[in-house]
Amino acid sequence: MITDKLLTVSGANTITNGVTTITGQAITGDAYSTDTIDLSQARDIGEGMPLYMVFTVVTAFDNLTSLDLEVVASANANLSSHTVLAETNVLLAGLTAGKQYVVTIPPQIASLGLRYLGARYDVNGSNPSAGSILTQIVTDIQDGKKFYASGFSVI
Image 1 (cartoon, rainbow, N blue to C red):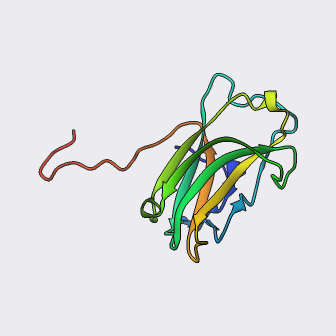
Image 2: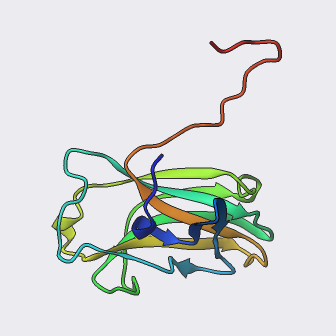
């Protein structure tokens, strides 16, 4: 999975002196992503190529029942009056550090006439006092977390 700083809508992935530091946007209640993607005009994105929003849990969550991870579009940069394009619901048990969730971004955004693309986090149950997420838009998904039985050789 190749990422791009300009396609990060929540949190940051920085490299300083060869050391990668990943920080997530703290989620302590319902929230929008700290950044948006300005499409500059209503348009279809990813024509002929699927795009994904990858939500990576950086800090484990507590207290809440579940969290809706939403891909949203809006006519406003602050994502108010948004339209949910796609979403997934994750229970508290699945919101541990390192977990990743992928939501496909529908390419027909232009038909909605909305200029800004971002993420929304909808808390179900109590608000968490801990938990953060890094959210990025990518063109392909990497599953680098393969596990093999002991004594099994991969050639």
